[in-house]
Amino acid sequence: MSIITVATSTYDDQRPGTSGLRKKVVVFQQPHYLENFVQAIFNSIETCQGQTLVVGGDGRYYNRQAIQTIIRMAAANGFAKLIIGQGGILSTPAVSCVIRKYQTIGGIVLSASHNPGGPDEDFGIKFNGSNGGPATEKVTEAIFATTKSLEHYLSCDSADVDLDTIGSTQVLNTEISIIDPVSDYADLMEELFDFEKMRSLLSNRRFKMCFDAMHAVTGPYAIEILEKRLGAPEGTVMNGVPSENFGGGHPDPNLVHAHELVERMNGTEPLAFGAASDGDGDRNMVLGSGFYINPCDSLALLLDNAHLVPAYKEGVAGVARSMPTGRAVDRVAAALEIPCYETPTGWKFFGNLMDAGKITLCGEESFGTGSSHVREKDGLWAVLFWLNIVAERNQPARTIVREHWSKYGRDYFSRHDYENVDSAKASEMIEQLRTKLSTMAGQQVGDLTVESADDYHYIDPIDGSESAKQGIRILFTDGSRIVMRLSGTGTSGATLRVYFDRYEGDPFHVSHDPQKALADLIIAADQLAGISAFTGRQKPDVIT
Ligand code: G1P
Ligand code: ZN
Image 1 (cartoon, helix red, strand yellow):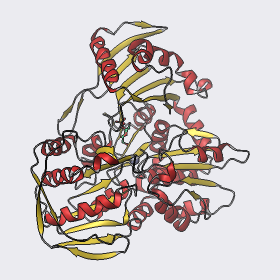
Image 2 (cartoon, helix red, strand yellow):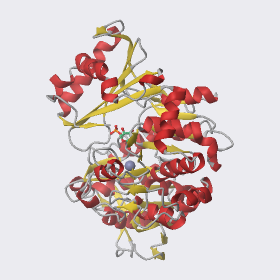
Image 3 (cartoon, rainbow, N blue to C red):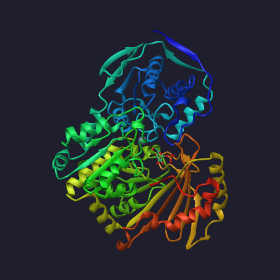
Image 4 (cartoon, rainbow, N blue to C red):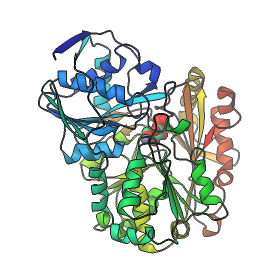
């Protein structure tokens, strides 16, 4: 076995997006494409010599091949050890947990999250640092810069490693350690939550719940924790075996894609509690009986009830939400007199705040909720948090939400996605809107009056780094808001995301359909930005 220096030529499209580099599988299969990006990651680490790296993915098509490539390159680059989940499996929050537990230099997550998988679908790669969180923009920009000038990468001529057997082998001088992907994570969950209390809830046959793993990575985690450790009946976890193409589905836990679960929550005998997670296990959707719980409300509720959960009973230092996320959590933070931070879209912006001890809980409207127990959003953690609250309060989830609305009022929220829009048209739409922002204040749209409009510019309160153009915000005099931005995770065309939110303080008006409560804002967005004219679409593809 020997180290090989491979000459390569560069690609110009390897700038990481909101969450790592995501492309179609065929793009990753081009000669040296994956290798270039991996070498750029390794070059961003001060020294690979003697370090330990965690590697795992969501089990999608190309996961195993990519891991074999990474093993050969990591060995040639001098890593002392690789920790790899059995079968190449590690959920995103589990990678974060393992990096932190074994104090490694970082980890590589192979996933395109909620995007479909398969030979014609998506693949992705993301680097997490030694805090367990996604690399900051400074690091991802450095990786991108390297990909543009790379002339060679290091690899070796070793045979494939058996990824399915737990134990250690050696490639060059690198120890390859295949670990149980679930146990470290499950142990951490057991430290955070009151498993005894939850066990009595889940073993009560009158409490019927279901967790939809959507043929993705959380299956083995949910079976171990919900069924084995917490005693829920076998079959509580549906679609629990990870598959390379997620059973042909779209592993995105929302009302559209988790329809099997939604049916069980709404049938003649609806279950008491339902939840789902995405491809790589960092997203969550929670449902009460016949009742959808919006992720923005969910974050607010977790904060308001955090004192009921062992890990958070001493208090929460502060919270953060991404800018487009509805502002329900702000009200709870104000009531608790703790700071509430606003960050750009993407989990990487929460890391500094968590590392500095400023926040304990954080979340995004895109079904992402998490805490400082790891440095990623964590789907199963959010579900367990909810179950702990339900067990402690001994009330159905939907009653808990309704009581929250009568206490704090409701922040109606909705996001409209226009997918696979012509990229040039989408950029043109955003550009023309940008030029109008400085003169928009005072403008009437229907019954609404614009109070202010800007393009969100973030200054990180910890390291002072700046991120410009993070989304257009239009605020109205009644406090309601429209946000527009283009997705940074899509792999074909552009995805336009339009976010709407409005506060309703009157307890008699908190149970309306959000689309109706936000109807005038939805019309205003089209009038202000010309959405239908630019996109050629009369309605969004996905509404959440
Ligand atoms: C989307 C979500 C964002 C999330 C990211 C990764 O990014 O909107 O909140 O952090 O996926 O899961 P976007 O496609 O909007 O750039
Ligand atoms: Zn994900």
